[in-house]
Amino acid sequence: MYVLITSDTVGGVWTYTQELVTGLVHAGHDVTLVSFGRLPVPHQTAWMQNLPRLDYRPTEYRLEWMEIAERDIDESKRYLELLIAEIKPDVLHFSQYCYGDLATNLPKLVVAHSDIVSWWTAVHGSEPEDTPWIRNYRDSVANGLRGADLVVAPSRWMLDQLSEYYLQLSAGQVIYNGRTPSLFDPDARKDDLVLSVGRVWDPAKNVSLLMQREQAARISIVGWEREPGREDRQRSVQAPANVSLLGPKSQAELREMYARTAIYAATSRYEPFGLAPLEAALSRCALVLHDNPVFRELWSDIGIFFSKDDAEGCAKRIDELRRNPELRKECANRAYNHAREKFTGSRMVEQYEKVYQQLASAVRLA
Image 1: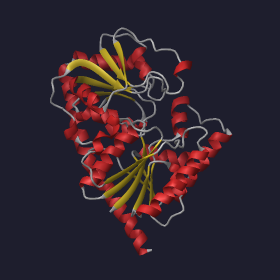
Image 2: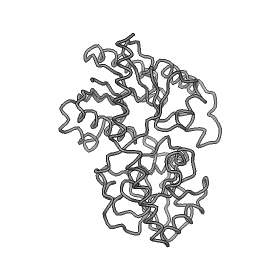
Image 3: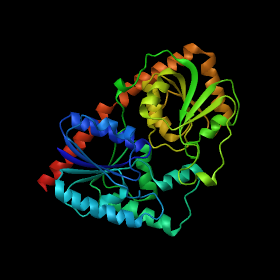
Image 4: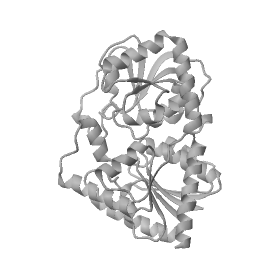
């Protein structure tokens, strides 16, 4: 099977792409990977070494959720059309909505990693104002969904958001994201540390909950403090004494942090899946989770939940686990076993392989 996959280099989509592409190549498939947005830095492409069946094409076309992206979208569509004619893949796998309506007879799969309207609603409590930009964005998403032969989402909740805010899907499926357990160290000695991964400036990640109440726990937060491109318009974040703001980290650095961390705090208001809690679970961290619908879908009865936007409740849950090592170990083991059962990279790759085969077979029979 020859698959063309698109991605972007920002955040969890790139980690998802790494896991999927690596698994597909090791399973004997050929992959051409096209990335949009910012060009990757060297540590982001180190995983591509020793993947001879991977053809990587980085580009700097703007992403569909960015303002003033219309011209880039048109140009990148033309780029993809020429590339498809050149390489002749069997299946097209798009991590952006806007390419779902490309004019081609090849089967098209669109993956719904997130979207602006559901993000805005989760963060602000209502849909965004009906501006020309939002109307164009909604139309682009709806056209891409309509043109796809199959729409995949990483959670049932995310799939439902597409029907609520865009259109009723003719064909949709949930494939949970996955990570390879052997990449993480679940057996290292744990320190009395709390870790959270999330952009400090992003209200969806909501890591400010961990800074609203000074507490005894030592907390490390990994992620950009200020929004890229707007650094000069934002103040530096003032964290309490117990909180360390560490900035962005590489995957290798994060793996070491997960390994020695006892508790992972997942504070997001909006998270269509959430790879960081999964990576923490595979490192045998106990999970303290914001009560949102996706974390309930994925980790119900596994993690320790606190109420929506409740900084006091979050601190209380962390303190309960710190004061009760046996409970913490029990929660950590539950999270680890659940992650290995439900959310492995191999399981995700097998499901995508099955979907690709079904799509390609349907085209051959048509």
